[in-house]
Image (cartoon, rainbow, N blue to C red):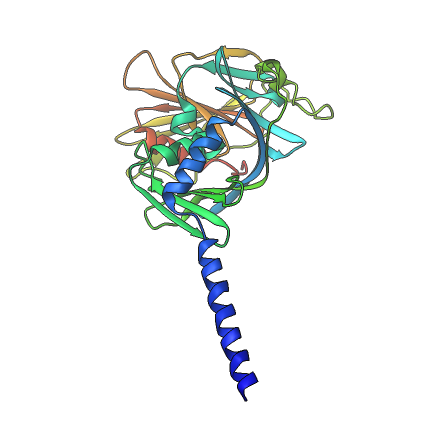
Length: 336
């Protein structure tokens, strides 16, 4: 009987010791994590990542393959497409500015801006970490080997209320970046498949010419001027807007919309040329980059983007957020 009592005491002591040990080895507190993140970013010289982006909008989902390269302090290359062998858009940053390249169309735009800070944080790990470190309204949670940071979306966005960034607790590598609406539902989710640091990149890897070379060698040439894509209509229209009869030519389609803020959409197979738009602004349609510019310095805006080898141009006096909604609703739409 005494032996049994000793055994019970030994078991209780063992359980107590193990419990204390587990508490000591638990998840790090927020202050410690922020210090670790600061140190990790300061030592970050280069990285590469592969991820899958899921965009949920207008009762449909679009998925994109994303491959990102980064070379400190400010070079990056973001390749977007259907899969690694079908890259359709590339965003490149180097000393000459930011380029949006469509390899299959042999076309690019060049301009300046702070896109990485405003929207690039969805794709760029170092920009996402910057957001965490600079946020003054941050919700932190640690569980099951994951660190979760939820912060207010800045600059303010009528479509996105908050951003959630999930990191691996052990090595601080990214696991997921999600953009949430006001109901905390995911609008955009980037799930990382791989992430590695210390990659031996050279500056010449981050040129528009190198991005242009990503066009698949076996791709069928796109005929400029051909109108073989039908009529691609937006699934979203602002309130009070009425669709008018489309105008078709041999090489393009013009969609016209009347209302308080009338606008037009032109669809065509683009001719390959290099277009300089230094005054333009890069706007992310989540998986499809677009270029937004003022027309003749007035209130009229024009948004250009490419999808499935078709060039789209939306022109009007719509608020930018409405232009984005209209453009996003056309992504993945099949021509009639």
